[in-house]
Image 1 (cartoon, rainbow, N blue to C red):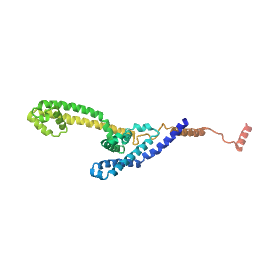
Image 2 (image 1 turned 135 degrees about the vertical axis):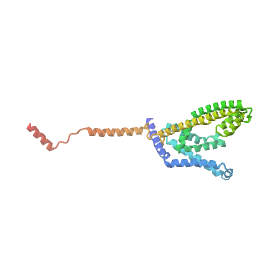
Image 3 (image 1 turned 180 degrees about the vertical axis):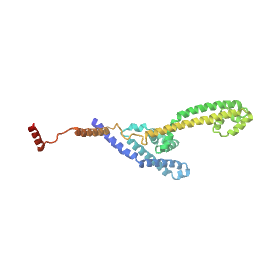
Image 4 (image 1 turned 90 degrees about the vertical axis):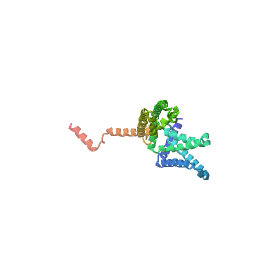
Length: 304
């Protein structure tokens, strides 16, 4: 049983080494990137009904070819991790690519045209694997989600408080914008972008001069303070994502795997050879006895 297991290990490592040489080559990356762009171009062509009616068969064949090519790609990358399959599933990008490819073979997805097109559109996001800056940006967006949720909660509370205050003071005079809590929230949400703030201030001044305090405080808090806080959260997440990308390196894996028993055996054999050479160098061997040496020894013994 041990011999069978030992025989399987070199086979896996040989397969992984050969597939890794293919998947880590520049030609493989360029080919996959070109396939992703071709898939995006096919999606764009399918928006023209005239082209779809004239070239429906060829477009279908091109889509099947893309699915086959992406399947071969993901199989090669899985085989490249045959000696360490856990490392493949630890990478979120690998899981995303695998899910996108496998979804094309699900019966429910293949029968639903809308879902299938959305999943084909998700393949475009795979370009992030080949564009480091885009990958950093997407990671930064994901890391900023907790801070963004807190921002949304604070923004919703601010909108609700100011909408209620606006409804109390402006509902009778301006029912179009503050006639209900929903209209007031919608009005203030649009004012957050400073679009139409001049008209709103002029309309408020016709009702009361104190309305300038209402609008000024709202613009200060919503358009300047909260937006700057959100920008700060995103910039911090971007710095963290860039630091993670630099620490993980371009290949996102260590150059050698300490778990490989053959690597360890080679290191042990090299260390043994070095120790043997050192031992032979340190062991003193007497020089061979010659006639001159024996004559010198005999003369010294006679003189004594």
